[in-house]
Every structure is written in structure tokens, then in C-alpha cells.
Figure (cartoon, helix red, strand yellow):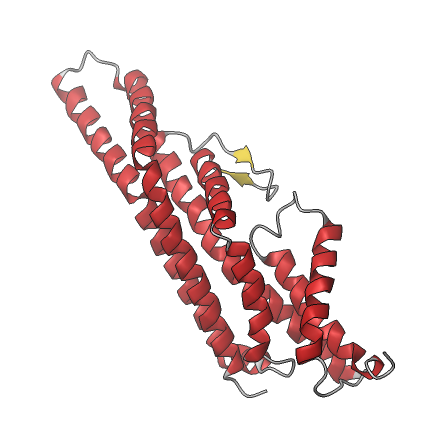
Length: 262
């Protein structure tokens, strides 16, 4: 045990990255997960990684160590935020659907994040979370953060990547991919509801005695829910592609940071 004491700063660096990742990653960052559990699971994973990563070169407790802590926290936050960014595609697609259905004003408080979210978006977000746990996505995320030390060591070049603009370019590209995925997920219902609007507009011209403003809203809500029930089984394949893009982006980010000089 005395031989491990000089390497304690290395364990603290590992603990900072794991904790930042858990606080930003999907599923783990929700309000329903107790803070004690987040700190405890981060400490356990840090102890598991420490014998293979932290016993190489002991870090000195100086000003450079403070910068190393900031760097490790940023690495964990970037990995967790990138993973969570793809889950926001579900809520964005739900917002597009709610606007077309006329439910855009009826936002509810999401108990997992504590923020306002659309009705359909909240439903799809919960469904995505359950499917993510069913596919053992949380196991792959823990495995990914543990294997990230193989390419992103404790003396990584994150600051160089930020200075070169590579991290900003990656985040912009990831956000554009998320927005494109959200459009693809909401396209069937948005197009169908748009055609419903066109049909109601033609009906208002051919039969002006109908009060379209009174009849149109229930019809659009009914059509939206019927189409949602019809395409609900296909969400499994959509979420599989979404999770595949999530882990692919995490792999790209790890390679981006790991190939930069420290």
C-alpha cells in the first residue's frame, strides 16, 4: 500500500474524468439517480482502472497538476455531452411532431432532466432510455470510458485539440448529425400531418360552411396518434441506428483527442 501512495494523484485524475463523464452522460445524469450512487460508481471504476493506468508515472502535486485536473474534467464532460447530445435528437424530433399536431404549447416537466420538454418528445425520450438499457448500452458506455485510457492517456493533448479548433469542428458536425437524425425520425409524421393540413385547406375552400379551425385540431391530433401507434414498432430499428451513431461519435472523439500531441 505504501508503494501506491505516490501514485494517488493519478487516481484523482482518473476519478475526475470518470465523475465528469457520469455527471454528463445519458441515463446516469438523470435526477432519479442519487448523487451518492454517481460518486460511488465513479470511485469503483477509478479503482478498477488505476492498476493498469495509474501506476506508470506518478504525477506531481503542483500547478501543472491543477491544469491536469481541468483537462481530465473536460475530457469526461466532452465524452458525456457527446453521448447525451444524441439523446436530444429524440426530443427535437418530438418537438417537430408536437408543432404539427398542435401540442407545441402543452410542454411538460421532464422528471429525468427537470426541464420542459414536448409531450411526444418526452414519451420518445423515455422509450429511448428504456431501449438503451435493454440493449445494455450503459455497459458499453462504461466499457468505452474504461478503454478510452488506451488512446487518451492522463497526459493527453486536449488543449491542443481545442486550440486547433478540432474539438469545435467535431461538436458542430455532431450537432448537425443529431439535427439530421431528428428530422429523419420525425419526417413520416410531419409529412403526414402536413398533407392533413393541405386536405383541410382544400376542404375549407370547397365547403366554407365547415368550421375548419374547430374540426382541424382534433383531426390532426387523432391522425398523429394513429400514425404514432403504426410506426411505434419501427422505433426499435431507429434507436439502434441512433445508438450506433452515438458510439461511433464517441470513438471519433477519443481518436481525435488521442492523436493530438500532449
